[in-house]
Image (spheres, rainbow, N blue to C red):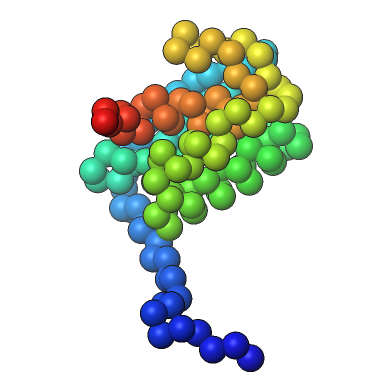
Length: 131
């Protein structure tokens, strides 16, 4: 059994719960011909704390994947992952459906995950600082 250096302290994450009644934003989107709705639950300070995606093909593998992605993304944000760190990890993921979108700010997306990450980055990420 190895001994921990006294300077090494275990990290403990604390989950930040959303209020029982919260504001939210719902955004209609289309990626590669697939339509959906992205709902973003907000903390009282206006920052995102959870996401939900509804796609037209309820019960499909795509719908199930979207639900799993949303659950993981939401938990990561609630446990302290910043929107900048989260979006950096999901932007650029490439798989079907992909292609043209209904959003002029994001004309093409590599996947629904890529689209959601880019949308969240545009709407919620802090602007980069100049050096």
